[in-house]
Image (cartoon, rainbow, N blue to C red; front, side):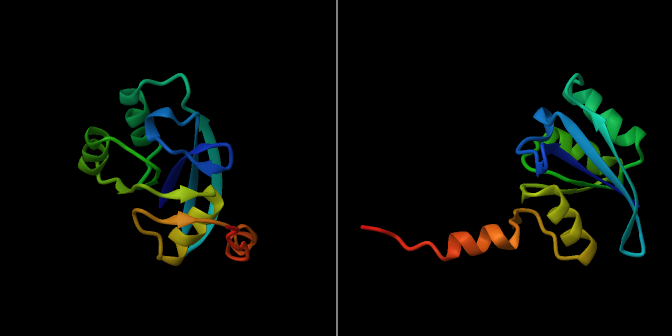
Length: 122
């Protein structure tokens, strides 16, 4: 199976149509066998959809995505998991565990602990 994540740096890009790069992973039996990255910054929204199809992507993990793109991908049997925020590596780990859902907010443990330990000052 091939999974793709549009990224901005190391994070899931907030918008599919604005992501400068696309990470893609080949997975089998819950393990990443191969990974790659392609540049999207020079592609139009339609060309981005074509590139995803050319790569043989079967699941797309992304932030925001418009309805047209979602339906176009789903029409080509691409599973779309949208409105995901956080680190791309965390997203792929959760996907492989089977617990990634649309609307997931993923943060590393150290970042989460730092925020939990803060106390409000009034």
